[in-house]
Length: 243
Length: 221
Ligand SMILES: Nc1ncnc2c1ncn2[C@@H]1O[C@H](COP(=O)(O)OP(=O)(O)O)[C@@H](O)[C@H]1O
Ligand SMILES: [Mg+2]
Image 1 (cartoon, chains in turn yellow, red):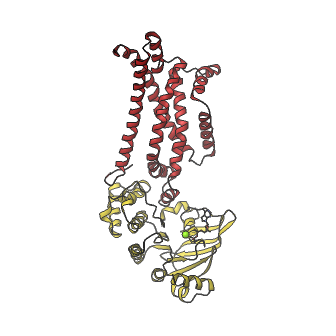
Image 2 (cartoon, chains in turn blue, brown; image 1 turned 30 degrees about the vertical axis):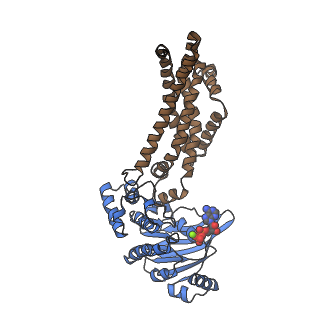
Image 3 (cartoon, rainbow over the protein chains, first blue to last red; image 1 turned 30 degrees about the horizontal axis):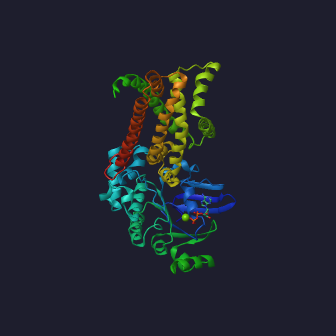
């Protein structure tokens, strides 16, 4: 994909917590519209990469550019994030969760923001729960609201951090369904941290395997999952499959 | 038992007590929020300032503070009338304890709420007003209510800086009439009635907040 715009560029990125180096000279390029799956053992730095891109963590060395911009705060509105624990605002209705940022951050007209929020809620299959509180929803429903909430900011890049890991197994499918649909619509760049290898195979253009804060290998799903170069990747993929 | 003739002087005292307590409560609660939120800001200077204020007012008695403001401050050229001194000291006192209440409630809101807000582009200020404070507020109400009742009890100190509050009037009246039992029973009932009002007020606020965040509450916060 040589002609595509490079949306995310990370070079020599180092992130430490105390004397624990979590990202160790990490390089990563993500072209526009790529669906990238990040896999790797717990603690390998997957969440930290997303959190750095979302400006939730500052880096200790290296370069991070989004759309060529190094001051990530300036491009933050082009990036949306969905968290493992949903993190919906519990004191607001579902609808307000989705309209809050467009109205108060983007200064959109309230009626317009509500109309668009209802469209997004319809897309995730929750238009009839607009007046409910997050606590009244199942985990799967809450996570779908969280996706709608992030999409309301019209991001070009969506970051998904193990968004189905906190869900009961029977609720995983409805969330993956929404992500699948988002991926099929084309012009969205998606970075997906997941342990669902079947889903990664199906949706990802490329899988990155992280180990101890470095990219050990990356490539198309078929190669990473079926014919990995590294023993560590092989063991990791096998362990997930046997789970 | 004719209580009626005792009432006018006692009601006069009650008015003084309430005129001290109400403004002190209002200013004290505002101070509590200002100071409690200041401790959650990133400004080191602001945080240290507030920490000093809280330490001083929690570490000394309201009586000493009152004497200091009313009798010592004039020595350095700051003269406050008794009413102003009383309101100032009680407000600062309530604010200092209240700041810790507000800080605790703000810190109890999960950090992840702030992260979700940041990911949506909220500024720190917007996050505070629309995400953190509304979630912290309910937890502050019962302890702030207790502080207001504490304030009410502390108003009895103001007679020591020449104000004729309810307690003071009761003592004067007792010396004049020697009807000790009746007078202090009446005074007891009056203080208790105000305390009940405070408790009821807090309950109403709590219920309003709960309703605003209930499933059919519309605006929330
Ligand atoms: N705020 C933090 N303070 C200290 N250590 C942290 C913090 N956040 C993450 N870490 C550590 O960084 C490492 C990588 O974390 P993370 O990126 O969450 O890994 P992953 O998402 O791949 O499981 C882990 O060892 C974790 O304990
Ligand atoms: Mg993680």
